[in-house]
Image 1 (cartoon, rainbow, N blue to C red):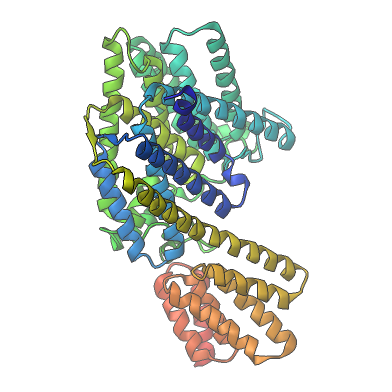
Image 2 (cartoon, helix red, strand yellow; image 1 turned 135 degrees about the vertical axis):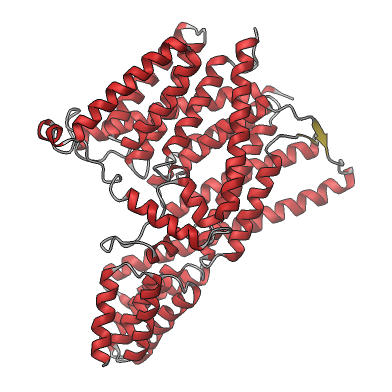
Length: 562
């Protein structure tokens, strides 16, 4: 195999790793679609290479069975989901992540793959840190009183900080445990310092938890002396934090220093999520349905909803059930066993395949991501999820003791037929992925026309959007709103009926969504169908009994009916 072909797949993985951190800066739908297509394209290339080179050997690993079970449970949740549109997109994303993992695991030149992945993560960490520092200077204009949020390329400051922690501990692992050339030390030191400054600018408390957990791993591996020093620092910093949040500390602390808008409401949210899980314990409610079911448990009336539980393990339990959580824990146990094998083997081996610094750095980075997952939803951010899967792929690739197995090779006459079938399937999947993008384009056009108060053209654009993506109910909800506006202007009952049809369709598609029922209830109330409005409000109270605003509307309508 030529050097060019040998480097192709690591370079493609490297591009995916770097590009994944930019996804929040573009349309969410477009970003997810491009990520899924990119990973599927890599898989397609690998399939053709193996097919035409007669290379059918694959590496069996200790995670094959739990990952197969995980995919099965995700598909079951998709079939059972009451929000099929969002569940389908999330299922495709999860499957693409698993494909990425196995592409890394099965790649023959694992040293080359690991080297390029680690370099890409460090360079990407440096890039997002520099951008975050620029944001901090441009927005806050001070490094001593961080009051506003710095996102860099991420959806929130905590995810930005979480990525930088990965960059920090990978750099520290290599610097502390490897013998490096001068240029390598300079590069890692620059990345380390820049990432630390970027982490400060993020003002993320969740990232500090992540950093503390990962440094614990580094200190434990480094030796008893370093571990004692680390524990002393942790205790000292903990006492400082306790002082800062105390009544006395608040008087001397700059305003906004300890503020973090993402910290509020987590404990009530977790308690409400536990009630959610207790109602759907075994198989959950379906992947990506947390935001649809959570309103019936929430007690914060001022908040429309929460998309995630701000704890990945609770989120998995709510959406996919306790069976899936058990499988995930099983996978993590295997992963940590494999990581410890790598670290111990590097202690004993004079010429390790994976260097001591790299194995320890990866261990600390994985611990960092998992620690922050206890208080965040960072695994729902593509940039962090792709890094996590890439690092775990390296661990399984180097530590797996499984043998090689080969499938039955295709005869020469069948290679063309199989290739045509695979390409046809890829094209069909591509069309299915692109159709929502076309729908999104029409919806954006419709929004522009609505802003210009050209409601008829806006209606036509949203109708086109629904044709390309009939499962996406927000288009139907917006179309119903437009029908009402135009019906009022033209005094045309056909538009009023159109609004009713779209609102009712939303409720039929997702009957547990309280906001769609609320929209329909208010429509009934406005147009005099008070009994039907009352019926909808009764459903709303059943679904969201803790929201006082809904209770007040219901009581007001009930008195009006009486």
